[in-house]
Image 1 (spheres, rainbow, N blue to C red):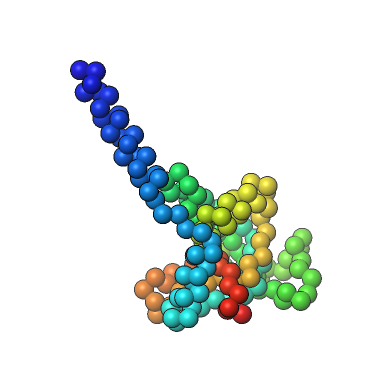
Image 2: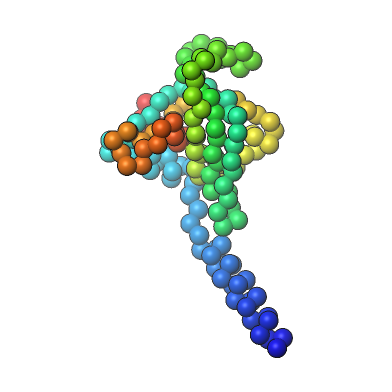
Length: 151
């Protein structure tokens, strides 16, 4: 009787362990290269120099590791050559909340740590989005990436 109870627990433990250690984890660099490829293919475009103020965030874990961070933020375009106003930004009345995804375990950890320290303002140099004609397009959905080849 005791073996019949222990066996399912062992099976579940092994299954969970295998799933955890065999999962593929993506780095921010790999994710950025994928976005770069999509921009060159023409399925995505991007906006530059966005000063964003987070109103809500969601950290998504997959197989016990951080997968991505989802930020809900109001963003304004800024001129990087001018002084950035963090204390009293001029946010337009009709500004919409954007959903910003930050994939890649390393960058997601960094953003999560910033959020833990109560940092609510971020400067994103490039935010990619799917074109409206693409099947993955969602209004106000953006993906943070970095690229040295795309200016």
